[in-house]
Length: 296
Image 1 (cartoon, one colour):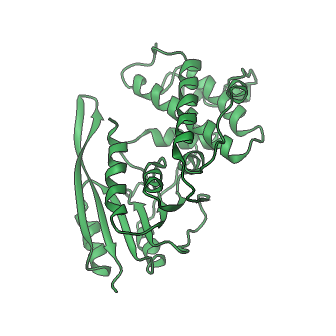
Image 2: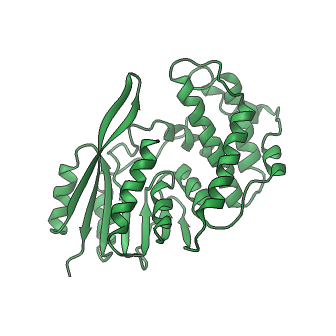
C-alpha cells in the first residue's frame, strides 16, 4: 500500500467526522485528500501553489466520463523530430532520465499541452506523463538504464489507470479549480484543508514535484514557487470565518500547533507514523493533522 494514499485516507476520515459538507482544499498535493473528501460526500473547491498539482486536480476531481480514448492516446504517442520538441528536456538526459526518456518528455509535452485540447484532457494527459516520470525516477535512483517496461508500455499502463480512476470517482459533488496565483476566497466553505509545507515551499521527501512542475512549465530549469515565511498567517487571516481549519504537516508540528492555539484555543492535534521509501529500505516519518474550530 502506498503510504501517501493511506495518509490521505487517514486525514479524510478524521476530517469527515466534523460533520461538514463543503471544503476548500489548498496545497493538497496530487488530489489525494480532495478525492477522499469527495468520497465522503464533500463538495470540494481546490487551489494549489504548484501548476502540476493544479493539473492533478483538474484531471481527477471532476465527475463525468471525460476519459482518454484510444485515438487520443495514440495521438499523444505520435513521434516528433523537431529539435525544440525532442530536445526540450535534454538537459535532464543522463542526469535524471535516460536520453530516450528525455526525448519522450518533450514529445509528450508538445502533443498534450500545445495542441489546443480542452483543459480536462490536458490535465489527464499530464497526470499520465507525471506518473510515467515517477516510474522512471524510481528506477533511476540506482542507475539510469534498462527498465522492465519500454516508454510506450508504461505510458499506456497509466492511461488505463487514469481511465479507471475517472469511472470510479462517481458522485455529483462539484469541484471548482482556482489556477495557481489566484488569491483563494473562503466562499461558502465550512472547512479549510491545507498542507503546511516547509519554508522552501516543497515537501522535501518528494523530489518528483520539481520535475513535474518544470515539465508542465516546459523548462527543465524553470524557477519554482517560493514559500514566504508569513504566507500561512496571511492565509489564515483571510480564512478567519471558516468554521474549521484542518492543517496537515510533516515532522515536528509543535511550533505550528502553538501558533494555531493562539488564535483557536480549542485546536487538537492528531499524529500518525508513516513509512516512506528510503535508499536503505524505509524511514518512519511523523505526519500530523491539526483540527481547529472557530469559537462559537
